Image (cartoon, rainbow, N blue to C red):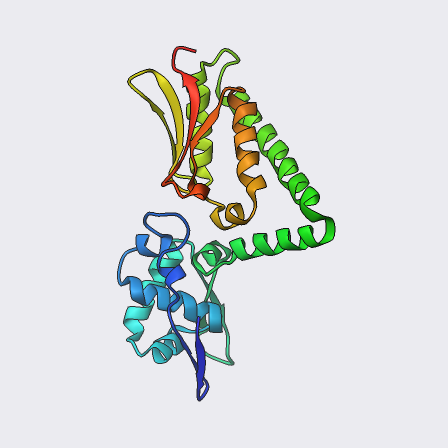
Length: 245
């Protein structure tokens, strides 16, 4: 986001991350209807200058007060903006608007950079052994969480294919675009079409090894990785076993 001073008004350029936040699909900004570019500009202005009145928003953005109020009401209904009455001497109070905590995920983030920086710091302190230990602990924590979820949703006698499907749902929720496929030969494969930690995995082989070890712990020792995003393939594919198992 670029900022420049012109008098007392700051010029805010819409960051592409606000236009396409998070995972693929319709963003909360686009879901509230109306002019998406104005909504994004309003959210950025509120983050930059809020709390602020509709009049000041309209002046700063060079648009009509009516248009600003229309979009503010839509954003307020969506839970992305809050309104507060502020008194200035006598007369009717003036309403000012600000972004809510729910809007935070619509703004640019750098979690990949943070994760990579933390791992670099860990490596500097304890070397590769400590980095491997971090991924091992993460794997154990993830394993326990997945096992608890499967225990809540599946019976102890659940088939391998049902456990593979539940694991795919869990991975999909984490951003891996995962699904379970059963081939004509009855072989079950778990396919991940996105690596949610791609930048971290590209620099740390332990991350990918930890995922393979995790899947083997959850679904059995016969799990084999057949394709690998980090190796240049389009997706990560894991051969799980046969649907008859």
